Length: 81
Image (cartoon, rainbow, N blue to C red; front, side):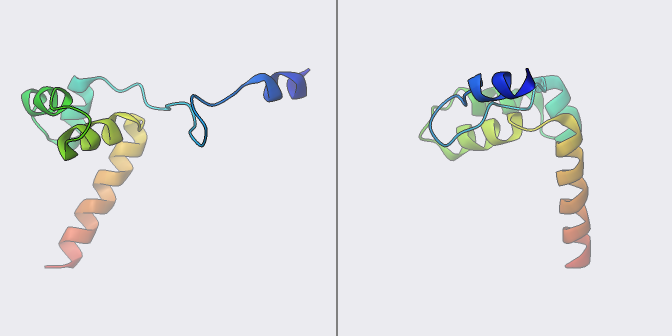
């Protein structure tokens, strides 16, 4: 039965997979340290803007994934000093 279900599921578009993250803007702000007002502005900039792309890149991750990204980012920046 699982094999039948597995093959019926299709990604959102060719070459893409379903979005994993369900993080709210408030949780995103808390995890990343980016002010919520900034995130809202980024969301409204439009799909050709790097801010919009960055916002949706962050939103595509789960809270645990973002915490891991932030941890590695801080470790990297501390090792460069």
